[in-house]
Length: 351
Image (cartoon, rainbow, N blue to C red; front, side, top):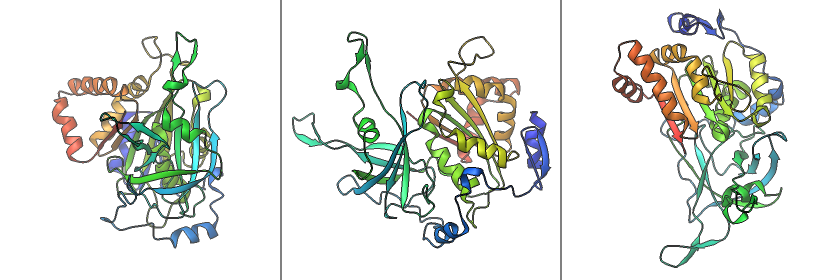
């Protein structure tokens, strides 16, 4: 794939240029996994008041002191046996009471109490999770929402085992939920990772682990649902970093989109325990992005949006790579990156 082929789309709007080839714009068949989106389901979805006008973005509908009690529909482990840790896809029934926009987060309040710094017993604080479904939910009816949660555990070298006293309180609560049980939800919140309004926009999405969650909300809207007011004609390039092939998340959906929309969608994996980078070390997400640094730079220079979600450790390597490209091109990196931020092209939500 050449820089020229990726950038050509900006000079020729009637063409799509991706994965190394330019083709006439066309409407591809829906991905296999999306064929459950029947015309009846779409008719129901489009009758819902979810396609809100600009300025009507849902924000903090439900607060810490007045959360929404939601019922769990399903909790599914979505990684293989050799994955490092456990990640679950959790579907919750909101009954349409917690509308959101793609890229936002919900808060979850784990049950129980804690002792605060003043020695007072208080409820646990809220934990934020990026939403892993579109506004219509996994069943296209606006009645559910989904979270992608990795179970946080701590391996104690002295015990030679996991220390249950140091496990993640909220992630374990969520992953242990059974269908029919309840959780308290707050939000939605967040503006950083929202999708641009232009259906012809270019997205470069960089994720580690469960940082893929907001991008799933993106691609469900782009390629699965395709509501009448958002017929996606742009490009989406996903960089995904996980430990090994068993740790890939939502790969079946990704492969379906690659088959159905090869000119609009691309995914590149960084598998740290299976691949090596150009220097012979482990392949991390910043190394994979660096392989395409010229293409990434040119796309950004031509208006693309770049998103980062996941571990903050990926950012220094990616920023150093872009600094190097700027130096090669005789540009001031600080000035260049500030320009991207000013134009709303740079979206970072890391932890």
